[in-house]
Amino acid sequence: MSRRSSTAPAGRKDATRLRIEKMEAGREQRRRAMQERKQTRKDEEERQRAIGNPGDVDFIGLVQAWRNEHADQAQDHATNTSSVPKICICVRKRPISDKERAKKDHDSITCFHPNVTVHNAKFKVDGITKYIDHTTFKFDHAFHETVTNQEVYEYSTMPLIDFVCDGSGGRGTVFAYGQTGSGKTYTMEGIQTRVAEDLFYTISNGAGGCIKETTLVSVAYFEIYGGYVQDLLNKRRKLKVLEDGNGEIVVTGLQEFEATNSNEFLDFIVEGNKARTTHSTEANDTSSRSHAICQIMLRDNDSGVLLGKLSLVDLAGSERGSDTKSHNSQRRNESAEINTSLLSLKECIRALDMNKSGTKHVPYRGSKLTLILKDCFTSSQAKTTMIATVSPGASSADHSLNTLRYADRIKEQKVEDTKSSNSRKSITPLARKPSVIKERKESLSSNKSAKKRQEDWEKAAQALFEQEEDLLNTHMSNISESAQLLTEEGRMLQQVQQEDVTPEEIETYAKRLEEIIERKIQLVETLEEKMASFRKTLQTEEELSKRIPIS
Image (cartoon, rainbow, N blue to C red; front, side, top):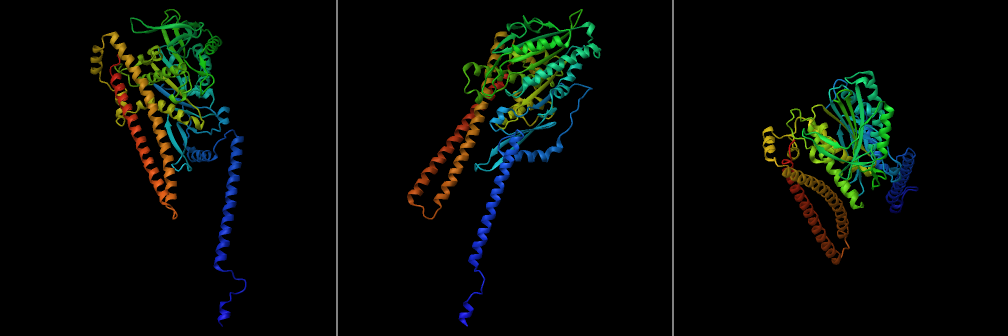
């Protein structure tokens, strides 16, 4: 009996063998799933490469999933023909370039009008898990990469043509701003061509106050490079910027050329564009290193009275301090001057919509660029359009964020509730009372003292730019190093928790842990020092901005 009971039935497998077979089947299933995922990833990489979007397919997939989810948010562009806004901010995304494809940059910008979203590819602290940080901005117009120059012109610049041609002395200004290599000059050249056609068409039809028979159209084209003003239509002759007794800014020696039709107008534009200063930088082989200003004046034939003025400004490419590390001293000085002028430009444009009473401070003396364009900021008939261009490559995501933040800060002053930004309110001299302005006018009667204060503010503004960049770089570096230390700590814990760990290994663990803790303290202290220095410079800039001469 006992022998029969101990004998297993024929064909029956014991529990251990069943578990082994189950584990082997699960292992084989996981292998097949892994092979399928690898093949799917390979096929997706080939598909993305074929459509011109190489790069990390995981990040590409995350971006595409976000786009699919938010595609219904895109709206149609609309032109407000009844009135032209004081400030119109547009953003244009260019297509992926061959240079970006060679670097395997994926598309990290989405334009669903009126929103622009930057998809910043990042890794979690474990250094393995991938995720996307989505940052969205809202503007008047957002143009994706398939939008043509004609469409950009229709919504950004064409409304200013009627405004300038109505004969009431309107000042229209169009700026193209963005990172070097983001498509500013391409966009501005397309706008210049269409302005030539529409301007003479409007005058010929007499739709506004200016008619062809009584209106003289003249063109002046010059650049600001390295602190010098040069006439692009007169063999790059150096010009002087002076202020007459009436407070009007005059560019002495600047030649204006009459254009009787669109072809003559375009000939002047092409000549000026060819003479413009360009240099090779890290970001662009033919980077525009100057601010190019094309001024179109409409005057009465008999009296010479200015009936309207349109300024087309192609700004020099913006660069961060970290992008100029391999530049020579001349390139670095150029970048510093460019950043200073862009800061002044931002403050002047922000003042436009807040200056209805004419008593608000417009810091147009902050740079030669804003000084020359004084009438475009101080005139009650001034209207401005800014076209911010962004590069779509993932490696340019930080640049794109800086460009969009710049444009967003310009537009945000149109929001009535500004209680949430105390520091920004103190920096921007838009909330000063008329009585305070009067007191400062009286205290700055000395021209020499006023000029010294202006120079001090410019130095403080440049120092603020540099320290902000230094603070951000230090913070990002600290985050990266902290993540590496955290990964190392995880490995150390795993090793020291093993059963066969020796006393020597525990001592090594404790010694290394002390070093890691000391390093973390150093990182925090360094960041605190950078932050304290930045706050001090910020306070200095705020105090100096309040003492700038008021015009």
